[in-house]
Length: 190
Ligand SMILES: C[S@@+](CC[C@H](N)C(=O)[O-])C[C@H]1O[C@@H](n2cnc3c(N)ncnc32)[C@H](O)[C@@H]1O
Image (cartoon, rainbow, N blue to C red; front, side, top):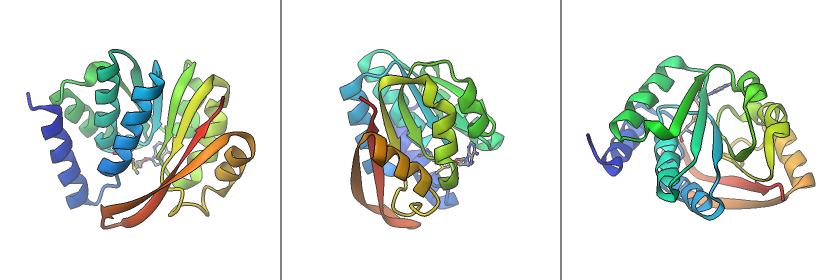
């Protein structure tokens, strides 16, 4: 078995080579910090891809000694590859992969969901949020990725959370060829 760091570095390389969008180190570190701070029992991620962010999330849950990640993707091949990467890192026990349209899957999540990550198709954010809203814990944290490069497609989502919750936009200079600058929106239900 490889170390978690070795698997993360390999998956990072593969995402860059194959141009598979992923959070990258800076945004994953932010999520890991938020998980350490909020200690969620259940994290839901929309957009598994090949498991780059999932590795970081599962590692952060392992560090706090508990918690599960449900991660969803519509692409069965990507999800299977994520499964192999999580296995290799010894983190599969923290993760349940779901395959299908997250706008539907989010309706059947058994909450309470303490932490939600939206990273699966810019124009799906609001539908996924509405589908899972009633399962969110009263103090849930929501992290939405790509709120700069996807702001037009996710305007409905951003308008809603900015009107109803405490929100903070965090900007990043990234070394990702497809997005040198972007932002994530953190929203606290409180
Ligand atoms: C930006 S990638 C996710 C990156 C991943 N979070 C990471 O950092 O490694 C977006 C993923 O969302 C998936 N996706 C797009 N539309 C979807 C939908 N309606 N339901 C579920 N997954 C979807 C795509 O197949 C793709 O793998």
